[in-house]
Length: 276
Image 1 (cartoon, helix red, strand yellow):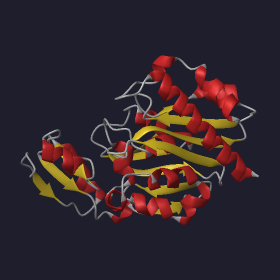
Image 2: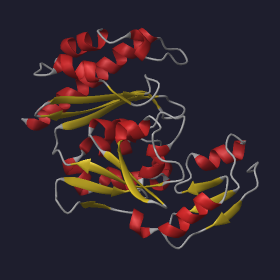
Image 3: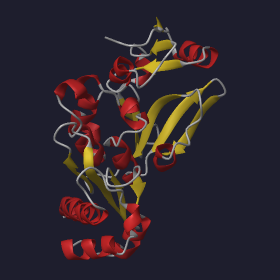
């Protein structure tokens, strides 16, 4: 039983959806519904109007941008579609792996890229992979489209009353990886790391163990040029401030820092092997 009352509308296009979201106080987007609907049932969230965008085909699918150097992933692409898409598997494997790690088949079949990126207050898997990939989040509002680096979007810098339309991901080949230790009950990450090896050095991001998905530039600097051995990666993580890692139920900052280092070492070694 849902504990809140709300109206429901299914707009015919993106412009209509934006007008509804900006014109009705308390309007909320309904896409996959994997976070919003449970919260409405418990009363953790409230809405006056649900704007169902699930049939907006312009927000679906994966394709190359015209320049060919990055992928455009529509916000309504499901996690199951993302996990198996040939372009994503070939050019952004950390995103495919992050999508595969989400929940169970039902969640992946309904949950969307946009919903996973925008889930507030939850450590989800796609933001950390998007940050490591140097991806850009595209949103649309009544004033037009805008783009934010995934790291800034994860920090809450998205414009108000905007709809997330796409994730733009530089194509990297297979030099990227994702690792995760999940909470057994919820499948949310206790800690998840994503890496991408570039000519300028590794890009490394962590979530679950931190207050939000973060890029760890200090660790990157210490590992620039290698090696990516477990000992070297753990030493790089030990040099990070302990307060970076936020203890959860049954964990400590020391444990989470060590776990993040172990997962990052595994991911870097897998990404390095893919280059060989």
